[in-house]
Length: 444
Image (cartoon, rainbow, N blue to C red; front, side, top):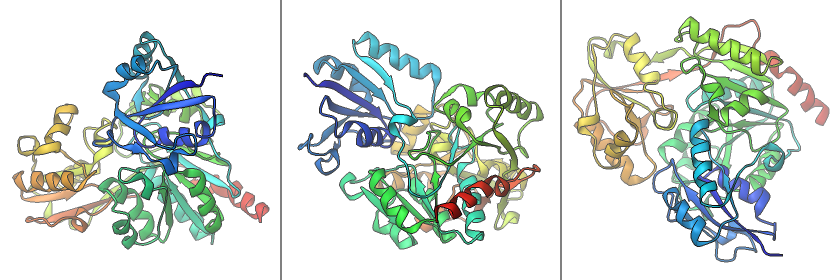
């Protein structure tokens, strides 16, 4: 039988996972290529033979998504699998329409074909958009479980932007591990807060191998989701965070709407900063689409280590990169803190941006008086620092999940913004986690 020729569209995460768990061992498929987008400098690489398996002794090439149409025609592709996240429904179908016009089938893959089952209970924390508040929700869940004496391991959605053959299965238990694995800014933002709390984090490329290693250390695994993707692991409790600063997005982005519909628990975050009418829209959409979900409402209050340094100063605000870019937010915790503590002006970094940082502003036109903490390579980190130094301000406000002063020195004073989840509804995450604790005891 002639093998069906396949291309997988991705962004160095879901695409590799779908290949590993579904296509890698199936002889009646031939994956010709991956295409890459969203993340800079990941195209032009090779999915290495040691990950690709015996059917692909030379590995699988990774092309920029812009070459997809040519690849479909040149290789007579039968099927294109869409495998990345946080993209508007209408844009998914624009891509599908072009693929169909080029002659190939368009495919989305769901949980039944792609989720792995663990030997221990799994709690997943996912979201309907990037920047909704997964990180602080995951930290809260881990804190609750750890406080109950549970051995908790966090498994993070993949961010393998370096040498894939060296990132098959990574374990992070100390800050030294971040340097050992040459982590990007984005990786450090996700791993460091867990490490600070004494939580070991696993991540990488092969999530079946990662699962086996995590099971050795965990009573309960917490899936720490990325973007608005759904979990790679079958979950015993599926917690999904929604964002009333972007009402309606929970029904209009892929696969965030899938998460909304799958959720056991929905966290309405940021209700301290959202308009009441937008919170009402979120509540109504939950009621219509997933009325059986339990709903927790929460604040994400911001604090600053030295708030007096902000008052009456001109500030440069640096925010979490993915939240601002494909998350499409115009601001984050840094802007909120700057306004809360009385900055008289927020600097516009755009005229001073250099290199790839300038390219980010060209691509994401909604960004104005805010600097995304882009740092996918040493070169980009250098360009980020140059942009920071060139932008006139009295003080730097670091709104990223990690303290950037760990990676670079500033010539001006800087303050760190922190934010944690604070439940304000009668229903709490601790209450929602009780069945998982019982399940854990039953497993033992």
